[in-house]
Amino acid sequence: MSRFLNVLMLAVLVAAPAAAGQLGLGREAAPDEIAAWDIDIRPDGAGLPEGSGTVTDGEEVFVERCAICHGDFGEGRDRWPVLAGGEGSLTADRPEKTIGSYWPYLSTVWDYVHRAMPFGDAQSLTDDEVYAITAYILYLNDLVDEEFELSRANFAEVRLPNEENFFDDPRPDTPLAAEAPLCMSDCKDEVKITMRAAVLDVTPEDGSNPTGAVVVETGTEPVAEAQSALDPALAEAGAKVYKKCKGCHQVGEGVKNRAGPHLNGVLGRTAGSLDGFRYSKAMTAKGAEGLVWTAETLNAFLEKPKSFVPKTKMSFKGLKSADDRAAIAAYLSQFTE
Image (cartoon, rainbow, N blue to C red; front, side, top):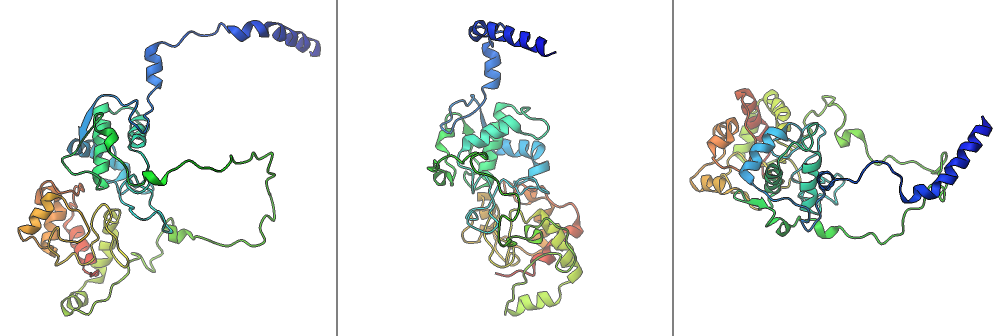
């Protein structure tokens, strides 16, 4: 056997010079074959195909093809990624790295959607659909208005908020494992717990605090009366339903506006009036007409948002169950400004 290997090795060495120039394997790739692989998009827009898509068209495609994982308005379902919100959270203990808060270039969004989405059916979207979905994601992150249309012509004009925080790393390359022996035991004198699963919200609720809500105290008599009449069981049920909302709407202590406004004190508030949040023109107009959020008006809105406020920025389709809508109102009544 060893004699055979020696002969084989000699044959390879003799043939090597000839093979170096021409292996004689395969054929030259055709231009259309190269084009099928060459689909990457650069930050300056190089590589983008012709096409366009509006926010409105993007919403329709997103709800049909993307919402099953990312939620109707980018809030994320189960453990699928959140796409909207997270502004100002990157320095927090639990940053939300969304397209609006973290991603540096719009080309990365377009390229990823085009190359890898929808999950399980990658590259099934047309170029126009990818433009439309990208436009809708920008809208969910309050970066464009509802009339916006994204195209190859204006693509490079759109800049994501976190672009300037990405820069070339000046450090030398990380040394190879062979150059830096790995520690396999007793590597630290002390091990400290820096995070717990309950804080990360990856463990089932044990019932001791099923909502995790912070009750905000108030000294105003009307709210105190409402809270005294509150049905605790209904509010608890509302906390569970509210999980569909919390991706965009915060409540409790230290709230911030996200893809949607925070909902502390929403009952009794004029629609479209919360300072610091950019509402759709439709919602602002409703407020100017005198719409005030009460249990009744909130119920009507949550049943079919786009029927109650046509062209509302909120793309959530609504809650079919009247019990769920009543529970949401009871839950929100606990939170004041």
